[in-house]
Image (cartoon, rainbow over all chains, first blue to last red; front, side, top):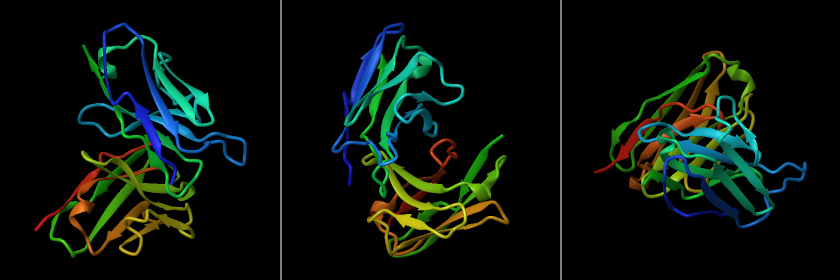
Length: 113
Length: 112
């Protein structure tokens, strides 16, 4: 199974400042079809997960443009350009290239300093 | 709007069975492959099972293979997860999802 490793696991940030979360996979996530199936999810306190980014860098509908995804191969990043109070929660990466199973990172908890 | 509502969770004893349901609305259910994903505070998010849009192909996590069965009734826009031989470590919030939409989840607690 592909192991997804996120860092940091806890990320205190100042409102209005940028934040960055790293996600590394144990093998390349480039699929035979040429696409890379790496998604990012946000889970606010008390809520279900919500997908923010699919296939590395594509924002889902309604996701603010302060969220961006990048990376390739085994190394991926989620960036928040200016953190807002509503961004507090846990962020997960997930790979869908080598399935089954689909595998998630451990989660990164974003909190306001 | 797109909505999925999970139900059927509860408190059960180890070794028993439970059947979860996921009622879908607001989209053409019969065209979507749907997953079950579970979440615990300790293990985080864990993929459990996938069923193809027509029910003809299914995949399971090793941790549930042989104990859980995913099925669907496209005429009722409903997905199911039959769980048997439940273990304490199956305790989790269970979600149905295509990774774009998620329900609110249904909590399964396995405890003696």
